Length: 227
Image 1 (cartoon, rainbow, N blue to C red):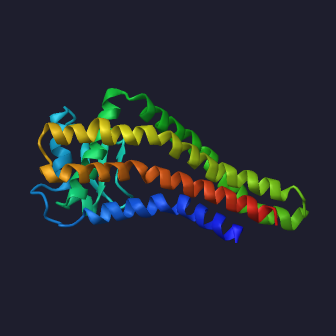
Image 2 (cartoon, helix red, strand yellow):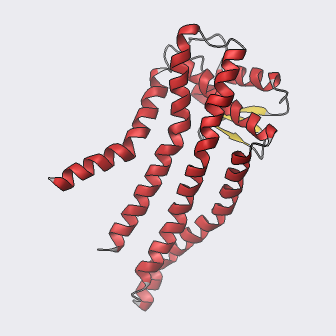
Image 3 (cartoon, rainbow, N blue to C red):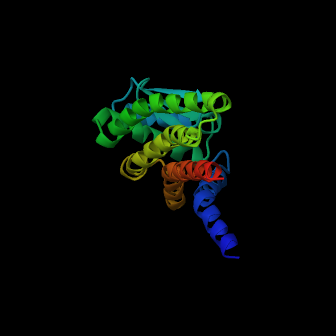
């Protein structure tokens, strides 16, 4: 019974934020014609207002994000072409990241360095995972479990580190950049402001969900290796 309760608590903690984020974004994706301008049009407007005409606004299938290397705000199709409250609020959030980059916001720079540094570690971890079964078959070495755990930690632990380092950057983009811009330029309908705050919170907490999932994956690795 205790194990069932613990499992339920873990499931709520790990999966709860992700479920909540999806529900919030989906809820305010309707009505689809809430605003005259699309997410892409709003992003372009806000970028120009902040002197960032060189930053492009692009459609992507890889999730809403700002690419500091390409200097591009990238929105998924539903946000790029959408006229919903979710579309324009998420677009403002990503423009917030572009402003952070322009101003040299330290946490964003740190995140970029971490992403570049951990790419190599994740490749090493993935490579070790790939060859571990062959090593085990050839050598029957008892240290294989440790090797596999180390590889899993490199692959999954580094992404967790990046996700946690991302959190202050996300909250700053939402509440120190996007929301003030939406207020300053009178973008939001008055009744939508509290809902926009919910969406901005959801946009920031996307990385909390990703971090928790990464930690769960590490725990799964450890459990498998202890069998």
